[in-house]
Amino acid sequence: MILDLNFAEVEEYVATLNEPKFRAKQLFEACTLLKNLDEISNLPKAFKEKIKDEYFSYEIVAHLKSKDGTQKIAIKLADGSIVESVLLSYKYGYTVCVSTQVGCRMGCKFCASTLNGLKRNLTPGEILLQILYFNRILGGDLKTRQVTNVVLMGCGEPLDNYENVAKFLRLASAPEGLNISQRNISLSTCGLVPNIYKLADDGFSVTLTISLHAPNDELRKTIMPIANAYKIEEILKGCDYYFDKTGRRICIEYSLIEGVNDKPECIRELASILKGRSCHVNLIPLNSVKEKKLMGVTRKKAYQIAGQLEKMGISATVRRTMGEDIEGACGQLRNKVGGENA
Ligand code: SAH
Image 1 (cartoon, rainbow, N blue to C red):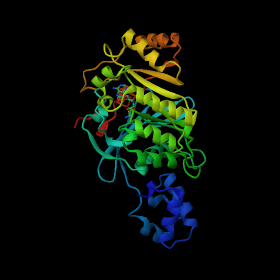
Image 2: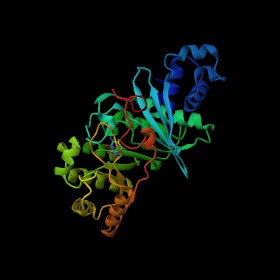
Image 3: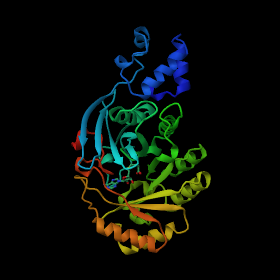
Image 4: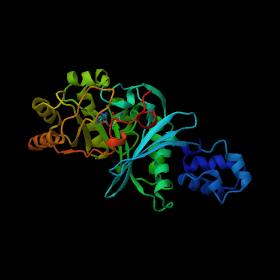
């Protein structure tokens, strides 16, 4: 698929078609604007005929708009798989929350994305497509694209699809492409430790976000199966390594689940393991997922907990919940249309 290719690869591809070099730039620009073949006016018909099998195809099968301005789309990919993506509108611009896999195999007890397991990995171009689509509907040309920030927090575990995600990050940040600064891209992981090291060693500088959700391994194992594979201590060591290599402060995600991880002793323990580390805690009252029994805390309690952490010297904020009415909030995305069941 053409969107999987970077500019140099598009040039090679065009060369194999025995077409002049300047066609590569035209083709790459058309792809970046997500133009359908019939919308590209500067490419000859014969050329379009040659590339039509490599060109992208997708269908938007649902498009929901929340009261708060959040939009969620369900995209049907070439093989019929469906992925969801969310557009969040902030004062500074637009953020797209992308999915990295069709489904997920991590099995976190509170998350809708993992309900039916993993179907398949997304390719770099299929991840990119989600941003391109929102740019397309927001309008703008190559210089004035509206999506400035990206979070890898949709369906899937990005570090469980490392090579494709790595290429996606390069594509999204390429100056000749979307040119989104890696500083404006957040990669969220439940903590696949070896790939945290790999991300640092491969020279990425995205914001690393760790879905911690518990201050000790015993509690973490009850809600996140991945805790059986990697200890919190190993994850935090990986974070220290990432920080040393990149200078980027780590973000710790902590979804507050009523009666599970919100007790004062949990919060004290959280503060003690994070003490002295360059990180920021993002608290979020758990969003409801209808198949799951777990409940979120009230926002008031979340603010109290943030205050408690701040008093212990840990920087913490409560994340705004957006798009909950369209099941577009954290942990509510799935590989089904608009929240339908399997
Ligand atoms: N697999 C990656 C990214 C996807 S989830 C990861 O684990 O980080 C993005 C964030 O939403 C994660 O922090 C995840 O733990 C959190 N999340 C999942 N379900 C949630 C829910 N029901 N309410 C609030 N946050 C949730």
